[in-house]
Image 1 (cartoon, rainbow, N blue to C red):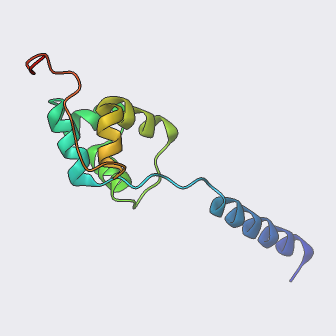
Image 2 (image 1 turned 30 degrees about the vertical axis):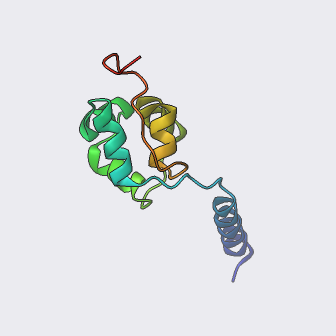
Length: 105
């Protein structure tokens, strides 16, 4: 193998190692995310449009088949709110309507 090819392959392995060091993405449960969106009256398609990705890509992200950009994760979290995010990521098992004006005082 010539020196140039060896250097190229060495660089490729280094790039693969750096990909393994990326921070892990939170695990999002699709059904829980849909419930959090439904509580706010937002569709999955509207969330995808807000994140500026197609709904298919967003579904792949939520299912863990694709990596999301930080922008997409920020849009998801901001759209469902902190309570919805905690519910969608399994940090809590209850989902509350924080912004409703029709609840008892």
